[in-house]
Image (cartoon, rainbow, N blue to C red; front, side, top):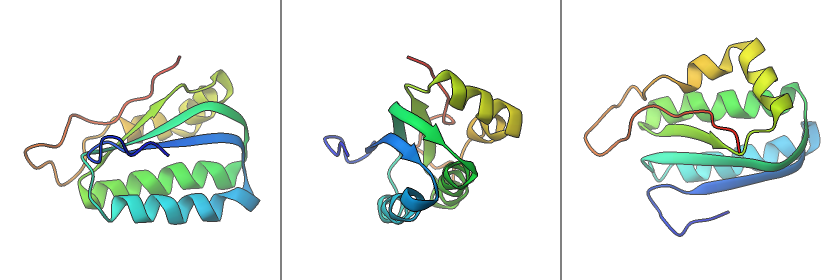
Length: 114
């Protein structure tokens, strides 16, 4: 976790994002979104595997971010995750601006590869 910029915390997700690891990550996301940051960034540079439970965590973050007015951004997205996000339509969700598009909130989240 990188909290050097409270307006844009970075959650580093590595290893496996699956059933056993999804619940603690979801709790961490909920805690961060409660502070209503402008953007919440997920860094997937060290991600090795993700199952459907992991995908549901990303969708959960997007849905809760919409309500909090927080953009969700992904960085260092591995090719396998790009494919999953594209095939499931999650990439399109992440490209939408938060509902609470108040001043000071950036443009929509984006998916970027490193």
